[in-house]
Image (tube, rainbow, N blue to C red; front, side, top):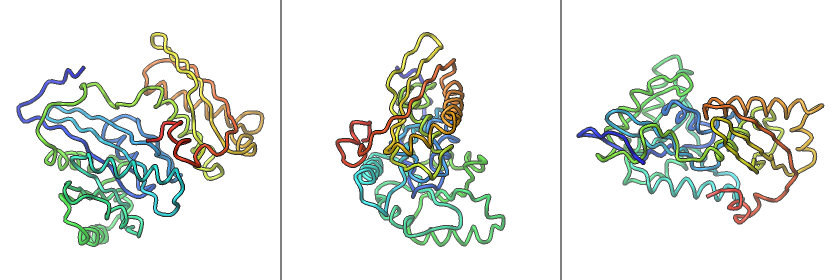
Amino acid sequence: MNTTSVASDFRCGYIAIVGRPNVGKSTLMNKLIGAKVSITSRKAQTTRHRITGIQTRDDAQYVYIDTPGFQTRHSNALNKTLNRTVITTLTAADVVLFVVEAGTFNDADAKVLQLLPMTVPVILVINKSDQLKDKAPLMAFAQQVASRRDFAAIVPVSAKQSFQLDRLEGEIRKLLPEGEAIFGEDDITDRSEKFLAAEIVREKVFRFVGDELPYTSTVVIEKFEQEGALRRVFAAILVGRDAHKAMLIGRKGDRLKEISTQARLDMEKLFGGTVYLEIWVKVKSGWADNEAGLRAYGYE
């Protein structure tokens, strides 16, 4: 139930965060809402679902939607599903944040920009701007990208360092429609704890195994129980080959133990209680080869 008090000029709306893979979209959303609800990794294509993050202020509620990075290279079933998620999100957004990496604008960025509807205001967010110490190249880069479209605002930021995120939030608020809050003031996401638990485990898988493991590997929560502040989570990591299973388990189970420990600590921080976590690794090839298999594992 929504219990948020509403100011006379209260604003509320959906903000889609889009861009090519690995420009920092998930980090940006987590920093904007002040909690980690979208997983991050140096590995491209980490975000696979439409993740909602909610930030409620006295005068506005921001409903951020972190989207998968738009895929331009391969046209397999998973990438087609991810791209459809991005396009669907754009049509429902009140504001779009088009995120690029400071100093880099390539063909993949251009293809994402072409997808953005002209009927929705777009803010150009230049992430990792702290990496360009000289402001002159940054200004030249901003002008170069701005020549491609009439942006509602251009904001250089560093999501990792929380640089200029308050300015970005202010620019977003100007573009949001007036209206009551959609979610309660304490809500930070519309995703279930079971879903978030799976995402946290998946993040640790990619963090500790990295490029050695195909990005199609996924995590399924087979059982999620809660008794008061205690949560019992039983998760299965699905991989395509026995070699991938051995890779995840590691010598004497050390790698799987580290994945489990770090995932449990993140869950306890996010859920605010003790977590008992068990993880298995299972070989299940072909799950991402068709759209029916993708839907079976929660892909939209």
